[in-house]
Amino acid sequence: SEFHLIALVFYQANTLRPYLNTVRHTLDASLCLRNFPSQTVERHNKPEVEVQSSKELLLNPVMICRNEQEKCLIESSINSVRVSIAIKQADEIESILCHKFTSFLMQRSEQFIVMRRKPAKGYDLSFLVTHMHLERMWKHKLIDFLIEFMEDIDKEISGMKIAINARARIIASEYVKQFCP
Amino acid sequence: QTMQSFHQIVPPSVGISCHAWNHTGEMLALCPGSNELYIYENCHHSDPNKWIKAHVLKEHDMLISGISWSDRNNKIVTCSHDRNAFVWKYDSSTNQWVPTLCVLRIDRAATYVQWSPDGAKFAVGSSNKTIPVCYLDSSQSSDWYVSRIIKRHKSTVVKLAWHPNSQILATVSSDRRCRIISATMNEIDRNADSGPFASHVPFGEVYPNGEILCNSWANAVDWNSSGSLLAVASHDSTIQIVDCTSNCQILHTIMYNSLPLNEIRFVGEEGIVGVGHDMEPLLFSSAGSGKWAMKSKIDSESLNSPAKRGSANSVTKVASARAMFQAKTSRGEDSANATQSSFKTTHRNVITHLQVRPNNSSYQISTTGPDGLIVFWEIGSLGLNVGSMSIR
Image (cartoon, rainbow over all chains, first blue to last red; front, side):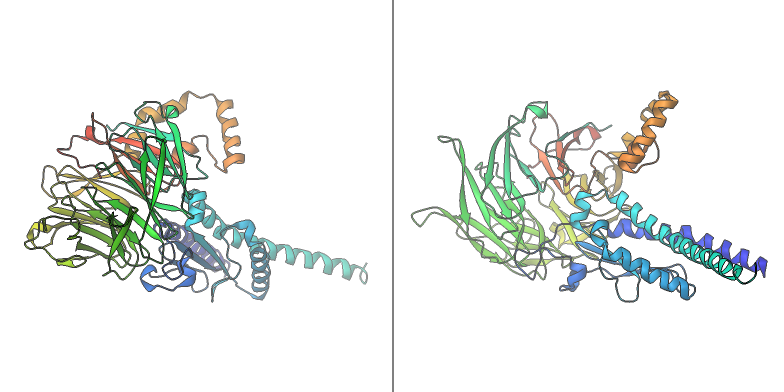
């Protein structure tokens, strides 16, 4: 079973690069946005992927799955793209950590500029990239940021889980020392 | 080898939404991503820093989305997201550009504007799914521009291109279609000219078989100089070449391996140059084989030549280490060559606009975009049969 564990970890690591590469190439194609004034309200300029008022301005959503739990949904339109990610939550602790961590981030979404305050349905975190963002920021750097974010969030949550377990062990052993000197 | 030169004419934080040259190439009109129109003079000077920003015109309320400068009557027409268009006429006695209102009758943004080649009318693309075609009405005591509306479209009209006979419009829209529509107006045109088509069609109607379907949003369109061929670029990285002399048959569909284009122009009868999300001009040609295909990317191939890469080896270790840490803190890049490798192109953002620069020596195009750069490309040196260029 030790062998099993190593093989599983190796396999998981093997799917990360192709997964992120696929997401990168899809984003590179989807993020071909333009300044597109609203067809429905005069003098307005709205992200069409959020408003969804004109079907001809939307592209087919693309879902990229690493496994049943980890996936990425990319919905594009003529002037905006919504990227939603579902983060790996293997057990209850990871689930609680993920929920708390993502709500911490989403409360501060203005700092991230492209982050959405609420995730799309069925996902843990969403980003909204509009034409205005691409005018101010370099496209390849924005894609780098999104890919690194997806990579790092898994590492952060695993790190937090390890820290919790270590802390719990230390506290428990200190407590028991009172009774067994 | 292509020669290119570039100039940071407005800061990158501002960007350029559109630009246009006057008929000699001595004056440049551009919009710096705002509601203002800048007019530069002295543009024949080889040093762009010596160009003079002679006029700043503020009449629009919102972003100016299109500028067209007629080479027949020297008038500038601008259209904006505020649903208006103005025609600017130069008054030499006061050295001012005087605006005239145009009654477009649209209640959404205007996206694009173009004078007809004869300078008698102009057409405006709009988010209202219509195209007002405007002409000067001098019957009242003061001059103003009135319009006749072309409908037919199911979504925003993104761009349009006039046929050389000034009576046919090719339009592209986000409803994934290119349409060839008659703009023959009895008030203006003396003789109805159907161009490459057999018989003429009334104003606002689509010519037979003149609706070309694309797989994605139709982004750009251009006629060749004789008005027989039409090229349509769409968002699925495809260019369709349509032969209007033989019932709008699609001669070729070029499927190229890069990102979508925003603007295309015929270069003579055998070449097309396209600009868009690859941040550099792409060249398509039918020279030699008679079959259209993508020939080359004009920018990154020359920048990646071995001569340029070799110069990095002569930098000392300390200097390169310092540069690496500096790049890491200021720009988040992790190698000394990062700037060179992160931008293989001159433009740093998508190219949104292309114009032919009137220049008596060679065929030059100017490209602009949200990075605030204006870049000039010598297309004439690429060995294509440039023939007679029409300035649009």
